[in-house]
Image (tube, rainbow, N blue to C red; front, side):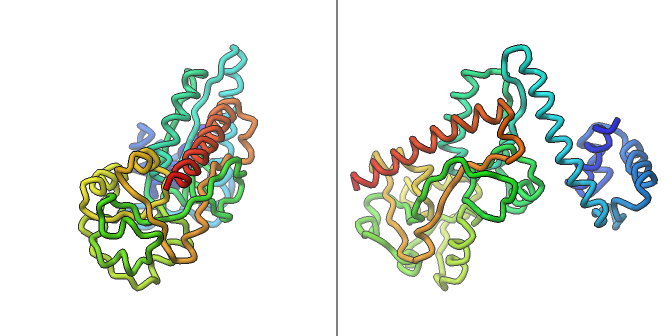
Length: 308
C-alpha cells in the first residue's frame, strides 16, 4: 500500500492534477484523492493546495514528494537486484539526453548493452528544457547525457568530451572555407534553428541571447533529424557541436566552422550517473558502455579535426 500512495503522490505532483494523475494511473480520481487525504490526516498537514482545476504542493508536500521519488527509485533498484538472483540482469533504466546523443551515442550503447543483457528495458526522455530540468532536480534519471552543469547535484560525471560549438553548413556555402565565424557574420545568411535552444549549455545560450545578431530563420523545428536534412539540402546554417554530425563531417557532406565568441569554446557533454545507483547492475552495464562510446566519440572527433 505504501508504494501505491507514493506513486499517486508522484503523479499528482508531476501532472498538477488529481484527475490527470488518476487517468495516467488508470484508477478512479476518488481513489487517488482518498489516499492523499488519508496521508494528509496521518501527517497532520496538507500536502497539496487545491487551485482551480488543479493542485500544487505545499512546503510539506515538497518534502513528501522528494521522499516518494527517492523511495520509488530505490524500490525499482531492489526489484532489479532480486531479479538478478536468477543469474541475469533485469531492470528499467531511466535516461534523459540532449538530442545529439540520442541520434548517435545512445542507440549504439543500448544495442550493445541489450545484446549482453536482453532483459534490461530503457525509458529515454527527450523532452523540453523545463521537463529535463525537472527530471534532474527530482533526481529521477538513473543516467543523463547532457551538457555538464554543476547544478545537477546528486550525479557523478563518469565520462566527458569537450566540444566546440560551430556553424554547420554545406561545403559549397559562402562561409564554409572560413577558419572561424562570429554570430553576426552568420546572421547575414539564412539559418535553421531548433525551437529549443537548450541544446546549448547555459553560457552559450546567454551568448546567443546577448549577441545582438538578428538571425533570418528560414525554418524553426524541434527535430534534430529534420535540421540535419535541411542543412544538407543547403537551406541554411545550423549551430551545433560536432557530436551528432561526425559521419556527415567525415564524408564532407557538411562542414563545421567554429564560432569565434569566447564562451563557445568550453562546451562539455558528459555521462552523469545517479550517485545512489552506481551499484545497480543494469545501470552499471549501460554506464560502462556509454563510457566506451564517449571514448569512441572523442577519437572520432580528433580524427575528423586532424583531417580538416
